[in-house]
Length: 275
Image 1 (cartoon, rainbow, N blue to C red):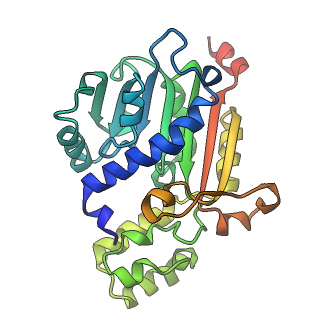
Image 2 (cartoon, rainbow, N blue to C red):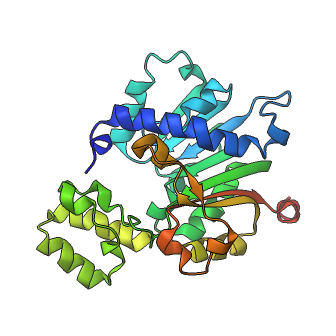
């Protein structure tokens, strides 16, 4: 386990830095031709916002923000971190499961919905992406970033408290009984094993993600596969590297792509059909 997993203020700061440097510019290029405002206030929703570090750059850009977080601990940390922030009047935090949350509670729909390292923790991903349509405005966009399941640390083994175990890559892609046995042999506490197995049950591949967004009628505006996740520059000082087209080999790419970014929009004809 790394220090950032214990020191939540550090984790908040790292989220803020990487979102400001990479994610916000990535989104802005596709929103109103790079003009965030375009004579109106942009509403931003983050699902699984944790302590809210990803939302701060959007607040600084003048957006009205809302964060939904299921963990009471993370939610309370967010309240503490924003307690003295001068921009907190533009931030709404909700401690609730997104499936139990309505657009009425969030004050309506949003121009931008952000899911950063969240979808790989959701049990029913098809239902989840269908439910999100209740929160996205007609011309709104959905930003999703996640680590493919088969990448070296797609099992989130970096959260294991035993440091030498937390740096072992690929152990999570073993069949579940073997993975469980490995963790037990490494004397990982039962509660940590249960958490890792939960992640194993929801991990998502690039192929499966593409299949779901196609089924749910999302239009891909932009996508980027990363050999070196931009987050790693903030965390480890590594320069981000894209996985260019010749690296994007079906199935195999999951093993070396450390993150994917997707910008999605609902298909207009589907929205009109609902109306």
